Image: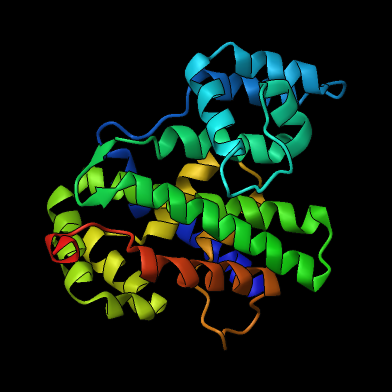
Length: 262
């Protein structure tokens, strides 16, 4: 397990990865409200109202959070009408992830070869499945929370890679649409992404999450994907994320394509 952690760390600090991603124009940035949210969250006496007040200052973010909170993903017993209620019901970590997912995978965004609505749907479904696995396995909330965050944010890096290499993204989308069985081998997909893009989607995602200030646990869980079932040192949490991803990415198809539409 120590070896796995060190391998991920080496991967994320590779100068070649840094140069590749820093060379992408329009590198995704989080809204100002996210930075304010993190600043408030770091204060020891922060309460629900403090967090809600920051979110309420950004109308678009507030609307997106309420939309996602009331989606079937969370399955809450009653409709949430205010941001304060959403923060109280979901907790800061979930709200943090929704701010990122809601802004990064914003509905209607145009990215070469990608359907951002599908990306967001897969992200929410992965996180929901990880939570179900955690509940079945008896994981504590503190054990489940970072894995669910990692599940939701696993693919944010694909937006960077597709934007920086649109021709490659379109090519991959067509191949996956025509032969979706290519997605059945996550290790092969990982190596193919590294060969075509210069790094894998999970490497790019982990790099971005590190820049955005997510915890080491979240960054390393994403950066360590994919995990073969027989990989030495892999944890149940790593395998849960790998399973949740495979469970949803094939039916939904991460990329769009003319072949898939036909």
